[in-house]
Image 1 (cartoon, each protein chain N blue to C red):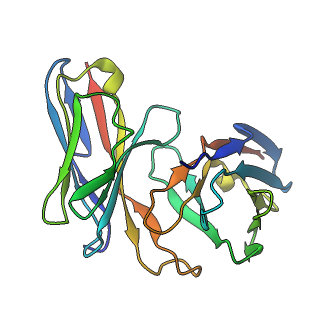
Image 2: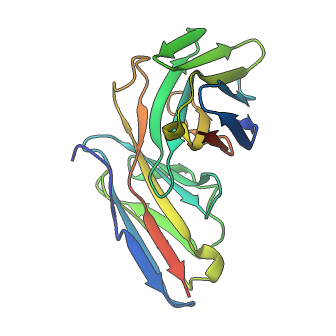
Length: 111
Length: 118
């Protein structure tokens, strides 16, 4: 089955700096890679996703990159703000299969 | 409905009692997932339904845990003889078709059921 690893487990950055979270996956059949943000006491919410036929996708201050050959994908947050503080989860999936989640990264943006 | 509904939102029970947690997924979608999240931890996969069958229930922690789904809609997660280590938030998720520009099904979570076993 699929195995998703996520690093780092915790990350602190100064407001305005960039944050990068990295995930690797093991199953080459996985073709869909979403990222979820979970604020304290709330449910995980999708913030951005990418399919395997695309190498990079950007939405304002967040971007995701995918390297299919190396089986890794990353979340990039630029110009971080205090409201970006949350736990971020990556996941990998392919049609008809379950979603495999990473262990999460707790991001703290220091004002 | 338009979203994933879970009940109860909070449940406090005594050790040894049975509990049932309910999930009403996005209308019309056949897949449904249960995850468990202990305090400060990640998303632990429990079971996955496709229609009324469960192709993958490898994540159920013990035989005290069971889940069923009837009519391809509502699912119930049952925990028998609850233990303190069962205390967690139980999240249900359902794919919402076409919400991602990628064309993939987007997994949407319910608000969760917080279980506390005293």
